[in-house]
Image 1 (cartoon, protein in one colour):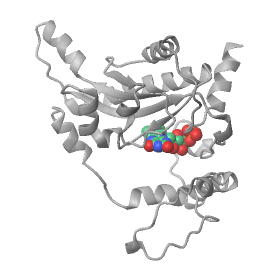
Image 2: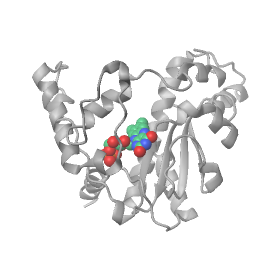
Image 3: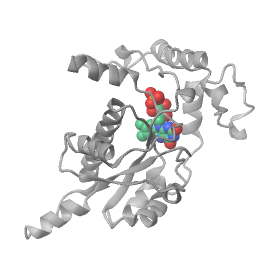
Image 4: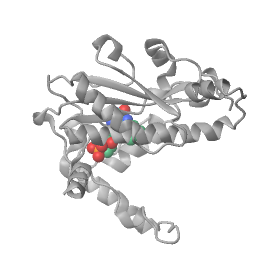
Length: 259
Ligand SMILES: Cc1cc2nc3c(=O)[nH]c(=O)nc-3n(C[C@H](O)[C@H](O)[C@H](O)COP(=O)(O)O)c2cc1C
């Protein structure tokens, strides 16, 4: 029974970008955050700041307006650094590797919160721009040195009128390899693209959301109208236009990491 339940929750989950007016109670919030804590950890290299205050959600990370609680998952070398100091030692590890672990600690905790929220009838969407807005988040949430945003999470109860479809994924055989990695052929890459593109076009996702990314003119004329514009074109456009905003490595250095 329990197993059925977790699979139902996982397979029914989709990102939710519109929420009802229903508030998330303190008790429910604590319950999903405690579930976050139960995730595996390397050294509990994470923490989370959350807010219900509209004015604190006024950030340049794309917070959806109906969000009831905004969480920012953080990688946190502040707490562990203090523990090491209290034990009378000096921290002396490779920050890049420790951050690598901390990112995983934070992300695993976030996924536990996401699934726990689903199990309690809530929905959520992650916000990937959080690390790009370090300065803003540092000020708003008073982050100390050696604490850095990994990802934002908008939470609330899903608006049934705005429920998105379940999104496709690549065929499993191109992502999960037994015994050895199998580098995809051109035809296999096409199959991956088709699985995604056909799924998104059928769902009409980009048309509904008017979510086309304009193509920089250096790439020539935009050949894609909404009939043909789909995931593989969209994700490519996200990654061909160069780096926008502050460089993460520079932001990490500002936060006191030695990289
Ligand atoms: C690291 C990360 C960052 C994301 N950032 C955003 C974001 O800024 N805005 C947004 O609307 N969705 C964001 N998403 C949600 C993805 O668009 C979504 O998970 C993906 O399209 C698959 O859809 P699904 O979650 O409905 O299965 C993000 C997801 C991840 C894992």
